[in-house]
Length: 347
Ligand SMILES: [Zn+2]
Image 1 (tube, rainbow, N blue to C red):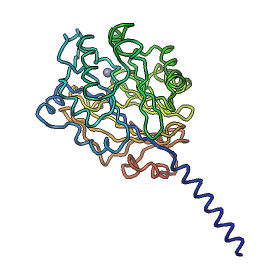
Image 2 (image 1 turned 60 degrees about the horizontal axis):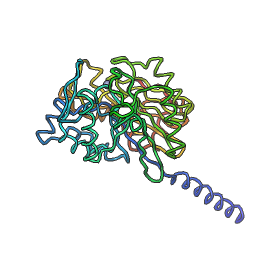
Image 3 (image 1 turned 90 degrees about the vertical axis):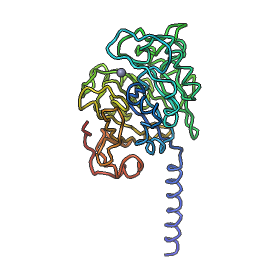
Image 4 (image 1 turned 135 degrees about the vertical axis):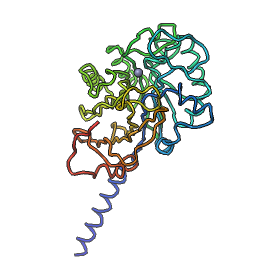
């Protein structure tokens, strides 16, 4: 009897030490927000001393790394390009962005709205405000260089690409601009991030897809798979201004469009909903992701939808499911146990 007890005790100790070793493995949380335009009403809020991020401040503050797509140029200089919408924000607005965001992607179809000089000026303002950026730079090689963020010993590489016109925003050999989504180079960049930059994880943030389409197109689907085949641990996308579906390929999550986050140029109801996505990462990739719906007001100000269920996913699941807020965002362990069978998450 005593021997059985001792055996049981030893087994229990061994088991619990294995579990705690796995749980103690460094986990880093990474948050993505969609299009942020600090022009228009959000810019005016900031100029009046208000913080348009305040409703989301606690959610942003709860994650280790916060990323957004900066869908405007931030500059005093420049001439508006001849296109339907042009967005330019005041450099003073960056001090508020800095409170909530660690890094921005500048690979999109608006960061070049006021020309290359204004784009270069923005890079300086971002540096001054200590906001890191990726997907653009002072020349082509800078634009394609991954931003490496290291937390708790995990090296995470972020890459940003735009594939929505105009291509004239692309960086040149010696001129400032964005990284264009050219398959061959993009796949090489992903491999380089691992090999040359020694990243543990690589996550491309894409600016792609058709505006107002609630479903990804074949181009997005093919490219997402190619990126994962090349070594991406997750693919996050935006630009359509609406939410699109999610997918899983080779056990890696694809979130085709997280939609808007802070923008007052809204055309229809679908554009007023965005996703703030939180990924939990370990050395093997994404362990869990979940989302919070941002409802965007006419002024372009996001408000978290506390009662609405939203998409979530756990490593091993073949597709995302819906999580209520009770088991979402702050409690990955609960997501693991939530719901008997995963069901597809609605947009
Ligand atoms: Zn866009």
